[in-house]
Amino acid sequence: MTAFILVSGVFTGAHVWQETAARLAAAGAEAHTAALTGLDASRPATGSRVDLETHIADVVGTIDAVAAAAPGRDVVLVGHDYGIHPVLGAADRRAERVARVVHLDAGMPRDGVPALAAIPDQELRARLAGCAAPGRTDGELAPPADRDAWQRWGSTAEVSDAALDRLTALAAPQPLGTLLQPLRLTGAAAAVPTTGVLCTGNGVSIEMVQKLVDFGDPALQALAGPSVTFFELPTGHWPMLSRPADLAGVLLRAAAGEGHRLTPAGQAGPPAHLRPFLLEVPECPRERRDHVDLHLPGTGDPRPAVVFVHGGPVPAGTRPTPRDWPTLVGYARYAAGQGVVGVTLDHRLHDVTHYGRAAADVAAAVELVRDHPRVDPDRVALWFFSGGGLLAADWLAAPPAWLRCLAATYPILAPLPNWGLTGHRFRPADAVAGAGALPVVLTRAGLETPEIAATVEEFLAAAGRCAADVEVVDVPHGRHGFETLDPTDESREAVRRAMRSVLARLTA
Image 1: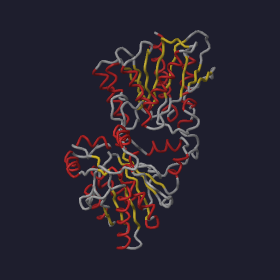
Image 2: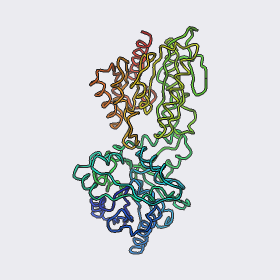
Image 3: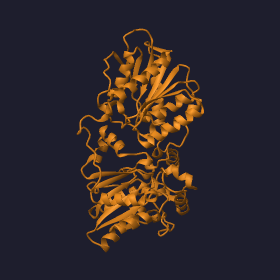
Image 4: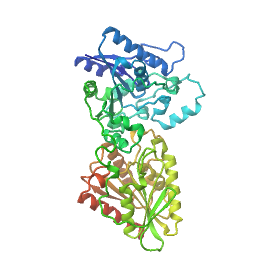
């Protein structure tokens, strides 16, 4: 028999696991909830300082109690959200008693890094980091005040209003020490099998994680190890409230060693981002300046330019860097073959917290391009891809006169739920109201993930309300990254049509 120990996230206690625990028990497993000091009603704080080590001790105590009651049971630790931090700390101290660790829509905590780093709300994270004195771990963080405020902590998709109201009523202040104290790991739990349960409604999927592994970042290669499995749940960040039966089923399968295993980088041939471009495009002269490459047409006269802005986040150690990826180079050469300067660049969107500096990199690249003697500075187009779509917001909100067209291909046009971007800057759906007469060419992948597709529909609805000039190029059978994943006649015609539309507006 398997004994599950369920550890809740910020502001929450054992009550969130009630239905999931009942279903696990009905299936013949044991289900225990670890009461965390100061968060769970059964374990109130007694005036002493509560920090991450306090919660690690709470989980260790639960492990020891389960082991004492039933020696030899397989103990599976399940950490949701913040709960993965005390789970990993406890697994590190009781590795010999833990059969598996399950990350339930949770990150990958590292030794020496506090749970604060995993808070999705970037504005709140910065405020807490800025006001925390060295070594200070006292104080509390107030819980969400109403059902709508939970969205700042993760997608509430499929959670009923009644469940959100109960979540709010039972929420407890989070002791700041649990967020500010660094996690300390010895590495003892590194050999414990691991499962990640990803909630796609919160903006993450197995496909996304595989792409991160494919980038070759050494820190992520462990995710493709033989003892690591993954599951997806098509729901928001609180599956124990929205899909308790499905969650219980996934946990039982995880305990049995089932699940999807990732492919190590390079083992299945070139990853998607390094496969050939779908069009035959001739080479052309290339000039490299700083973080910018200019692919030049044959004529020496100043020509219009198209700047292609890659997506992300892309891990900092990725090689080759995006400006040398076949898709971006293919588009740039295709543009050069049509008589305009095609530009690729590298920007520093290595994490969802880096949109500000990535935007500065793009702005600097554009100025470099406009100053180039082969470029007509009054005829420039910007073309954004994937996660780079959020960077389009600045240009939509106040388009300069020289920006003749803005294009976006399978873009993300609103922050995904787990990105924690709470401000108004990187929201193209809000910014399009300022676009005026700026033409927009949007290439839409028909097989896009629902979460990204929803951001495109939000943008198009906003564009419709303000009568923005938007042309949509559809690829009905294309996936995100269709230029290398789906090199079909349909995909090729979509690329040609989008390029024709951009160049027609650029050269008019």
